[in-house]
Length: 410
Image (cartoon, rainbow, N blue to C red; front, side):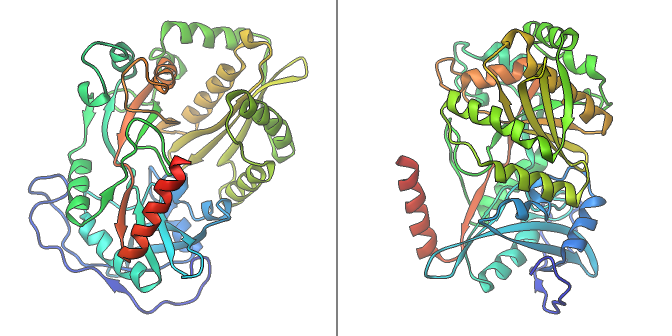
């Protein structure tokens, strides 16, 4: 199991891939080396990620410590003796039958322009079947298409524009499209969430790109140039105002949670307990100091907003936010956002992720306002590869799917 130093001499080998069509969807230079899979230690896993870029925090081994109801396992792909890929697999057990759902969020971490999904996933499927998994769910986390914030803002509510599929993207990825085609050919089924959110990671997300079209880093003014004019004015007011924005520590998590409970009551959602946030802060910062940051904005001793940001390799995520209903004209959440952007730029982050959105462009949809808000703050809208399921024990996978469908309707 991941996290110890026990030797695992048995490897799980993938059948050699000899097809000429690579993951770019055309003749490509794809490695034909057989990949082998085995468990790796937490130290091996972390060391691999440290020499890799654009790694989701959901694929760091320490994330398993945050998700206490899941069991984490670190697996590695080897080309001969070289570790070329890794995954955090989260296992959730079924009662009685002692089988697990194996979940790989935003992973695995491997170069899909060098290795095909079949090369990568064949040994993974063999390993998981042999170790009691009834279903594999994964989300490769690749960018399929992206749309600029201004284009999305103009398209919202426009006649003939129902979804993002009706809007010309600014970027597409042949690699990601080829990965999706091969997943389908291998028998994976895509999670269809329609226009709403569902359990797991969203297929469509909003991200503030911190680089320009020539892939050069932007400064704060360059990022603000992508805001709507109203949001840009509010951000400037927040920066000029009397707010104090500070970085908090574990001892300040109670202050965050007080605002978070207020936000949950105001917006009618069920929040997480304080213990979850304290555990997350400790686990992530113990593994990589400074990777989880708490921000607080206050005025004359009164907390008005608080947020949590996570960094992993060269990426940043704004994952939790909370605010008071008082003194809204001081724009405390925007003051924190400006600080997070500045800190992300200073850390060399490629983007600041702002979480999920709906693919709808219909103004009357209940999630359209969220898309408008996030594009107003300069977010590109990104279609990722989404999440995919493969049944390893079909009767159990069928029963699990029926149960999840029933639970979603409750």
